[in-house]
Amino acid sequence: MKKLLSVVLVLAMSMTFLTGCGNTDTETNNDAVDTETTDDAADDATEGDSEETADEETGDVAGSEGTLKIGGIGPTTDDAAVYGLAVKNAAQLAVDEINAAGGVNGMMLELNFQDDESDAEKAVNAYNTLKDWNMQVLVGTVTSTPCIAVAEKSAADNIFQLTPSGSAVECIANDNTFRVCFSDPNQGKASAQYIGENSLATKVAVIYDSSSVYSSGIYETFAAEAANQSLEIVAAEAFTADSNKDFTVQLQKAKDSGAELLFLPIYYNEASLILAQAKTIGFAPTFFGCDGLDGILAVENFDTSLAEGVMLLTPFAADAEDDLTKNFVSTYDATYGGIPNQFAADAYDAVYAIKAAAEKAGITADMSASDICDAFKTAMTEITVDGLTGTGMTWTADGEPNKEPKAVKIVDGVYTAM
Image (cartoon, rainbow, N blue to C red):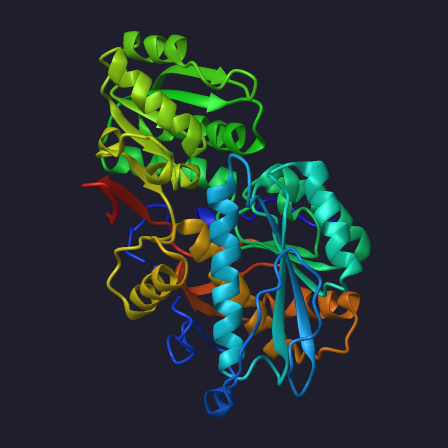
């Protein structure tokens, strides 16, 4: 067992919030993520096609040095599907780009993505399916509770696991597990600091899901940091997964408390209901959330005008002007339709981090998953990745990423970098 949460990420939470988002054209964005360990010879390699293998067992992708099998797990159906589909699509996009550029150490990459419906038991079943497929590396899972359940299995099997978006502390409690996103505690602390340092409010109300490790974890560190930022939490109202449709009572208490800002460390489905119900009772504070709100603009039948001015911490802004983001957004839109969210960016960076670690460690396709895992444990602490969610990203032995957090604001129905 490894680790306490690395507080390294509490970094410059005094943050300079910078702006930071494929087309199946194999000539587009092959060098999309630069790493210190990139093999320059890949640029001269022969282009080849990779075949999507999600949800089915397939043969090896043709490659002179074999195939590195990457498993993926996340919700592609049910309520959190917007997260899982984004991860699946962006991971496949990265795999296709890398294969088109010659692969990794001569190997082709193959992705097999399984649906877990954001359910722990189904996530474990998906993991077992991928093990039977001879998975060598795992990207996933997407949401925290399934990720924790799968992490127990991957630790016992010594299979390397890199979650793009599992933010609960327990997701990376073992030395074979790393993450791309920020942890819940870091999101909570960073949110309080951003609100305080930018003088967004002095009286804050919170509505959170006490049955969710994601939501309650963020709330706890937010509340602890609020006092340091001279923020008064005037109302803290909880709900559970069994009572997540009617928020009238919580909203009325928040309104009566005189809150100027409502902090929502929750997922987008509940947030969309809260915004609609807040309008009904005439409650119009500043709304501020974390990465779980990313996806709110895609909620079916949601009036996106209700989200105007909503702010959220996220490591990715699709309107950023750097070439990497512009290429990613345009290629993703051309391939899958729609603007990629932060979860897509996390997944894209995850695959490129695996590429960098594999190059650093000299991984070959004939290595066992356990041997690859042992090599990755060291290699991940030695690479630097310039990705969509951060430049100069590094990882601690605790599995935490070092990068600067960012924030976006919804303006005219789109996420805009702040």
